[in-house]
Length: 137
Image (tube, rainbow, N blue to C red; front, top):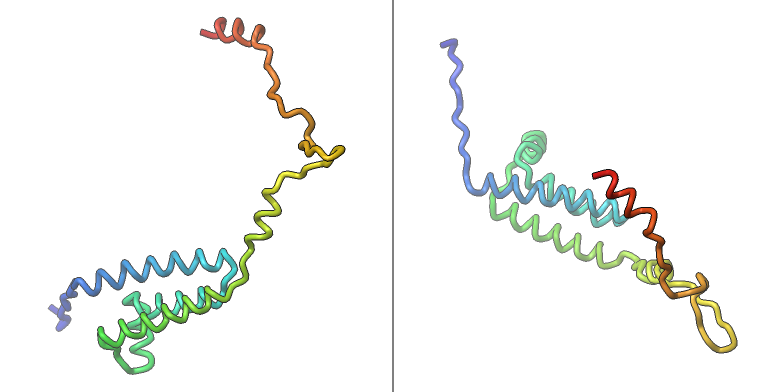
């Protein structure tokens, strides 16, 4: 043809694993950002850069170096450790959640009753609803 040769792409197990884990860490990184732990998300996005083949190939070509599979694995493990350390130092909001869920209670001569008043369920009049439903059929 015009001297152009098509290069065959190899699909290997490591390539598939890099795509799968790269996408999983990308989703986890987005979830981590939504939680507000930005430093932990930074480590996850570094893992994504190392794992996803087009991104890592672009960086490797730009910096003129190549990572072996074993070195890539060690780098991902180190970044996971950094993620674990960064996510363990985030403040816990459990007290804020518990106070938001707590039901306000008023004290009345030593007895506690809910502010809403009566705790007995109200009966609903169904005499008008049932005939109307029967007419609709």
